[in-house]
Length: 130
Image (cartoon, rainbow, N blue to C red):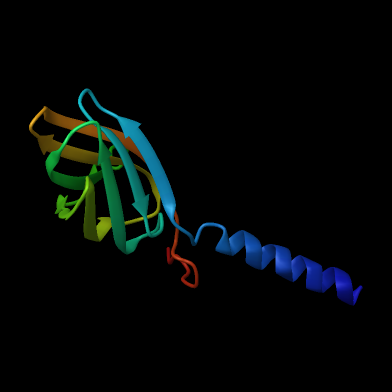
């Protein structure tokens, strides 16, 4: 019996931690292909690394919206790191649920906005209050 309880505790802990890691999104626009890696798909401040392919990008920004609730977050500008890599830091998601993350890219070959859907969870170690 004791082994079963220990095994269950390990499985529950693993399930809770499953959402704690980085979240990777990929998408294609008319001019650019993007890979976005978020430090986590959770509320609060997150870090985002954006890799842009298929042409030199000059600016990259991210914004999130929750259309079914009428929520939208302010746009966050990413800082260029060279070789098509950009970094952003800020609060993208104000609450848990399904969000649309829009990544806007401007460069020599034109502009693109790639939108991906993401499910946002409560950060590990925190409980959502109602």
